[in-house]
Structure formats: structure tokens, C-alpha cells
Length: 155
Length: 116
Image (tube, rainbow over all chains, first blue to last red; front, side, top):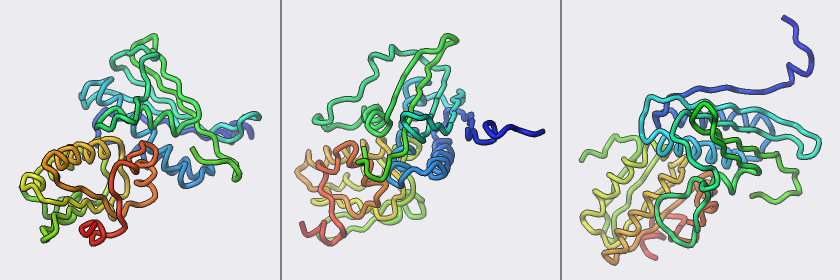
């Protein structure tokens, strides 16, 4: 089967995992590889891995309330638009408990205590973060990170 | 509780100045409950100083960070000291994003941490 140049340039990886925390390391490894391939600096590769990991852990912990046999779908997709340049779009979809996206916020870090750091990490690392409720049930999280130009400061 | 051979815990050393726990591998939501169990076991004896050596830790997420905060709160509760040692850039990045690099005492070496 022949493909046009545009189709062969598309880089996307679709993963489906069960909500068992043992599966986190596999997704991290895939995210790391893809982020490196897309030209992210090492610090940003680490940040992307961490943000995805935190998002998945939140689904496991809160969306699925610790159940280990539920599906989480992950898409890692390269993007390259005129305005923002090259980047990585990460989309997570689950069928867990729905939450009003408006209440998903990072917390005040001045209050040092365990817990509640995941959303802060996601919002600090990624350039764009959007939670939404899916019509069919469950939640979607769409995050985007753009490759920084050499002169841009890190997040 | 057997810790020898556990991939998360490379070593636990009882020194005159305090207890040193040498961790290894990736500490994430899958592993953080084990980390809490291990560190709780060490601080049961109320060491005056607890040093956590992160030199062989390749990755840590907020569940690992949160576990360290929990342990710190308990050590602080009995007026002990706690320090972290030798984190790699990836682990340090997680501490910096959450500003926990400003909360914990972080040293380059175990000896430095024990003498601080």
C-alpha cells in the first residue's frame, strides 16, 4: 500500500493499558522515546514523562478508584503547526468517574504536605492542559508541549 | 521485614550518626507504598538522623515525593533530622517543579548529610 508524503510524516502512537500501576513504567518508556525523537531537550523529556505519569496515576487513583482492570487509552502524537512549532500532543481517555473540569486545579505549594501534587506538575510542565467529560462516560485529558527554541527558558 | 534483595532498597546502614537508606530504581505510584513501608520500618527506631540516598534512583513521581514528605513529618515529630542525598537531574527536576527542593535538606554525599 502506498502512502502520500503527508501520511508518512504523521507520527502517532496509540497505547491501551489496564489501570494497574505496574503499567506506568511501560508508558513512561514510550513517552520518553517519542519525546526524544521529536527533539525535546532532556529536561523537557523528563517533564513530559512525569506529566503523563502523574495524569495516569490520577486516573488510576481517582477515576478508577484503585481498580486495576479498567482501560486507559493513551495517544502520543507529534504536531507541527505554523504558530507554535513542533510539539507533542498527549491524550488520555478513561471510562472512570467524571469530575467537573473546573474543579481540577493544582494546589498551593506553600502548604507542604503529601498528596495533590500531580495536577500542579501537569500544569507546570505542559504548555496546554484541557480536561473534559466524555459523552460516553469517563474523562479525557489533552496536554500539549512544544519544543522550545534554544533561546527559550525552561518551564 | 526483609529488605535485602528488594530492588527498591539497595541497602540500610545503621551508623553512629544516624540511619542511611539507599534506594534504587523507579519510584512511582506502583512502588511508593513499598517505600513508605521501608522508611516507616527504619524510623520506628527513631534515628536521630535519617539520610535517604537517592543516587541510584532513576525516577520519582509525586507519590514518591509525597512519601518522603510524610516521613519527614514523622521524623520532625520526634525532633529528628532528615536529609536527601545525590539525586540525578531527572529526580531533581521533580523536586524543583514541586518546590520540594527548598523544603528538604539536600546534600551531595551521605557523610556531608550526617555531619550537617
